[in-house]
Length: 467
Ligand code: ATP
Ligand code: MN
Image 1 (tube, protein in one colour):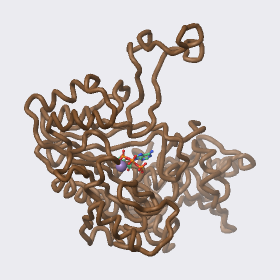
Image 2: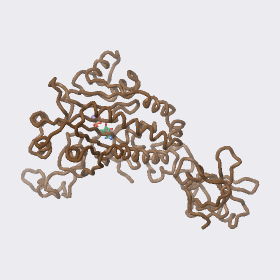
Image 3: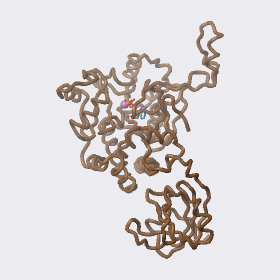
Image 4: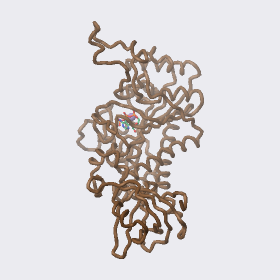
């Protein structure tokens, strides 16, 4: 082989005219000229742009091989890089040999034409990463994941692996998926009470897929300092919205000696860092989203970077909504949850920038959030961004054992089940805080994509877990 294989990304950026190179990838298009040349647009997924391959009809084996070079076929090419006379690219590759590794029957390959709907592409989730849009999403998702790790690693946070299977319900944040080895349908039949005895199940008690790693994160945060978890999270909410998945990825930092203000500042810095990294490391893909998916994406992101997130108390937010002079589908009243329409009005129209809503009514929030002295509200915070709504939810945690126990009572939770969580307050309790960012919500913000099913490789939603 003339040269070790290069990625198209590196050739387009640094490749020197005159050098011998070896590339491999998939054909996007082929065009034959009357002057005795074929032009192949080759893509290997390393970047958005294709490499133009020029094949001289005089190349050995040309006649036989070129017929098999159709959209979707895989190729290995050895040749010499030349300065491109065209303005579209700096260099092009003049093939000396080319092998068709795998053909793609033009009569059958589903990605012949451009412009398939995202709905159709979801049905061929095994092929959609070969399109420009889904290739770009894969690269941005990778960049964001790395950026998340870098953000916390640079600040001395430990990456903690919290369990995926759990026997405690964190907050009742959503419906849980049960994990069992029991044949549930047959089980209850023969019993007098017709109820399942989980004592016989694999873990000896009812187990579920995690809805949050927070409680376990707190265990480590109150031992080794700031930590973060980053992994799959499961919620069996039967809500078919463009912003909910049954399986999504969540980043959950937890910081000892942090109060709500510290928490809000970190969340803001975190989101801005991810945006900055995506803009600088995936400039080509981000330009594509701005041109082809949503023409406002880059302007929105730049605007976010240039402004401080506005902090608004829940009570102030309700007042703004009440005096907005609008008809809401869901009525606004203090003590009611903010619905997506309210959140989007606040961030898109009223403030026109990200906001952090804090100090929610305690009746709306889980038991572990720190109670304010007013007896009415807790130290909760939600970060809301234009087009997406809630992207982060977090709080300062209740570190006082007596208050925590009272709150468990209010939420109908059995303190005995949370004995270990109580111990964190019994022994060396400290103020602490944390939040959760949904990775896919972040990707919706970055890419301008409308549907959360399109920013995760293999979406799981009600009645859908194919691929
Ligand atoms: P929502 O009100 O939008 O349903 P939530 O308040 O239930 O969200 P939290 O429990 O606060 O969500 O979870 C923290 C973050 O995880 C959210 O801010 C969001 O970014 C993300 N998230 C929550 N549920 C989902 C889901 N079903 N699919 C994708 N991301 C989610
Ligand atoms: Mn929330």
